[in-house]
Every structure is written in structure tokens, then in C-alpha cells.
Length: 435
Figure 1 (tube, rainbow, N blue to C red):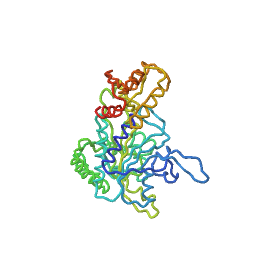
Figure 2 (figure 1 turned 90 degrees about the vertical axis):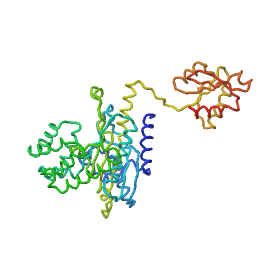
Figure 3 (figure 1 turned 45 degrees about the horizontal axis):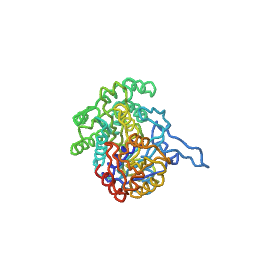
Figure 4 (figure 1 turned 30 degrees about the vertical axis):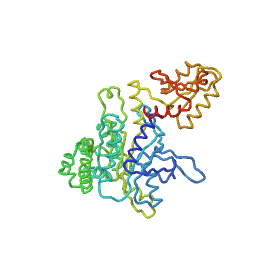
């Protein structure tokens, strides 16, 4: 929880820096709100038991509930962030940070704006967060749903199979093209020559030069949808260059993002493994992802009013797994409490004095602890401070009572100083502000 809190504070701090307000939605939605929004992944939704004729499901992500919220409240413009739990009926793989209940951190910009400005900001936020968390080198793959659909069309994929083929292509980060090709030919009934044409495209990735190359492609340049997507990506790269992050972004034609609701730019951040990590076969997949979904709000609006949206989601559980793994590897210990001062005594029958003293510290806003024993041994108390990483110890005994002083001991250096009882709080606060 300590590691998680640090990660979440950093992520939320970034969202706030970009002007987002916080939103929360219920843990479950009406089942009909969630169906047909996630493509093949719909089977992973947790359905709840019939509640007197009301069919409810646990939320699968934070995007669909956000779109439902915008439509219900007729909100046309909003920049929001949401940190909350979501549920998926997957097979958990703990080491990769895949769980059935996990936390998502989303940032979305809803509203009609000039093209690619909000999209570029979302990618900038992703870069800021991943750099800030110091997870190592990363790359953000970018594609556009219109380029994908255009590519499928010019390769000869029947329109009815676009979504099915899309979710197979989405597996290219986990399995090889050979296996994906087998799936789309053998299981999804695509002609082998069509699959081979797709293969020529999905193995391409690069920067702005690849976008220009695709503009010249004899097949792709004949498709209006693909040209629109390429035009937007060209503009996006222009803005990413101004934000100073273009070198972190790769135009990748294999990126598909399996969810059905994406309509334009899509992106996914992956950590680049060092050779040592590759040997350990520690692969967490994508750590952040998102894209543009311009039609989702319209699905919830009785009049079909559309609100264009773009957003991103940070996979905190996966990031959490990586940070935890690293701490184990480097033998790092982390403090699980924030106690600043420990109240100790070397003598028996001093529980009353310790309680009076600790109340004084708590009332002054100082984080303090004591052992719940009437007569603890001094060594036990000092060992506890060392184990828990508590920086200061306040010691009170008969001698101190007589002289009206308190001993203040630094746990790390073991130095002790005598302080007048009435000056104790001020002295502790001064030391804490300096550390």
C-alpha cells in the first residue's frame, strides 16, 4: 500500500497539473450499459445476480461509465480524472500484475476541439508519468483505427470481420505474426492471401517518415478513411515534436487495441526491457494505453448527441508489480508507517507519564507511538524504533521528572540531548522540519 500510494500520488499530481477535475462513478452499472462496448472481451464482464428484475454488472473499465455519465448529465465538455477499481473475469497472473480486481487511473478530455491538440496532451501526460515513475526506458506505440479499417478494406477483409480481425491483430504484442496469421485464417476464415497482405502492413513501425511512406502506398492511399487517419497522425507528430516527446512515440501498424469503442488515434505504452530483464522473462505488457472514442457518448444519449472524447489509462497494478520486483532485486526496504517520534521509558510504572506525553505530541500534529505495555524494557523499545525506521525517541524516567526535562534521542546517531519539558514539542517540530 505504501508503494501504491506513492505511485498514485504521482499519477494524480500529474492529472491535476493538467487541469483535470476528479469524478467517481458506481462500482456497478446496468448490464445493458456495458454490453456490446468491449468486443470479444465482453465475456470477461462480471454479471451480478438478478436483483428483482434489474440486471447489473461490475464495471469493466472507467471509460464506459464516464461516457454514460456525460450523456445522462448532458455534459458537453469536461476534463476529468478517475481513480477506481474495475473487475474482469480473467485468469490472474500475479507476477505480471494481471488481476481480476484492479485499480485504474484514467484521464479524459471530452468536448469538440480542434484536431489532435487534446490527443497530443494525453500522450504528453503518459510520458510525464512514465518518466516520473522512473521505470526505465519506454516507447508509446501509436496507430489510428481509421488506418486499420482502411488497411483491412484494401487488403480484402470483409467489413463484417473487421472487429474480429482487429482483436486478433491486438495479440501481436504477445504472440508472433505466424500464430496470429494461423488464427485469422483457420479460426476466423480469412483467405491466406488476404492474411499475407495484412502481414506486410502490420510488421511496419517507425516515425514521421513511415506516415509519409504510407501516404505514397499504392493501395492505402486509395482509401479515404486511411488518408484521414494518416493526416491526423501527421499533425499529431507535429505537436508531439513541439512537446519534446516525438522520439518516445512510434507509429506502429500492428497496434489494434481490442476494445470496440475506439474511433481514431489509439496508443499503448510498453517498457523496453534491458537484456537482464529479458533473461528473467519478466514481461508485463503495456503499462498505459488509450485513444479516441468519438461515438461512445452518443450510444447512451436518447437523441444520439455525440461528444467526442480522448483519454488514457495508467495500469497501476502492472507498474506496482515492476516497482515491487525491483525493490526485491535491489534489496530495498520501505517504511510502512510514518511515525516520527516514539515515547519510551527506562523504568517501571511510567505508563501515566508516557500517555500524557504522547497525547501532547498527537495534539500538536506529531505522528507518535508507544508500546502497549505497562513496563516495557528500554532495549525492546529502542529495537522497535530501529526496525520501524522511527527517527526520534523521547525518553522519560524518574531523573527526568525531577529535573523537569525530557531526553530526545536520535535513533540513527544514538545522540541524546536534554530538553525542558515545555520546549519539547517546539524542538521536535524544528528537527522534523529540518529533516
